Image (cartoon, rainbow, N blue to C red; front, side):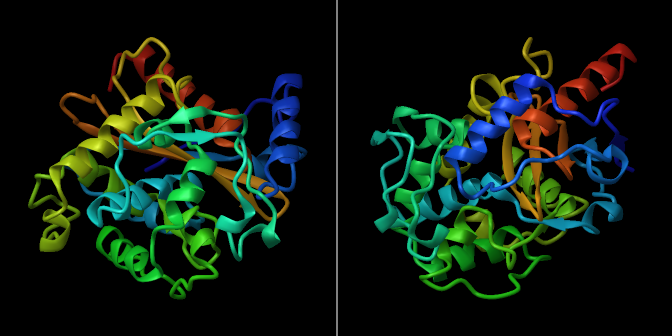
Length: 306
């Protein structure tokens, strides 16, 4: 069963408010702030935390949402498996995308990062969730390539509609309402990323031979980048003392007039034994999902249990 956390206060701190204002101004994708006026209705957080070799609880599959930047892991698989770019080739993030690269997204307006990331490689871009890098990279992907990889990674969750060239950017940036995932889908995915050589698990009795055929270098890139996200990227505040050796990826999207966010991953990095997924129904990953994950790990550490 998931752990449900309700923040003690439904009001954003001054720092969170200013950060959210800056994000809203810079990134048109997220057009409204979470009000926090009714924490019981809008600020609930669920955390699933299970042993890697256990069965994913049925409750984790019930509620769907857009995955946001978590889907950049799938984009990476497409890019590397189809040899569409070299992972070590640097890209300069100036803090925004070229609108010519994002047809069908944001009505031709540029998509912004929270701040300019400078020169980044693929691994860096995953760790800091660089929208500019991925908007440029996604321009190399075809809708068919994206859909095929989605089918391999999420066999239980077919796309509601197939992406087209005009809609691909929304799918590949995790903000298409036709491409939703549940916590259960993400837990299953994290399980396989953590140990891709596992051919039989409780939740994956028959893993697609095509998924098993994904290059070890691709899996290695995902794990390395997720470790970076946990240490110095978007999830750096989840476990600042690195007690658990987390590897994770975050994602934030709009949900009506609010934000929703995710954080999913595994630990310990060197020898994975557990997987986890955080679903924040209101708030960005930085302001809500990651602090909730940090508080959760502090709580279980205090109890002396993994």
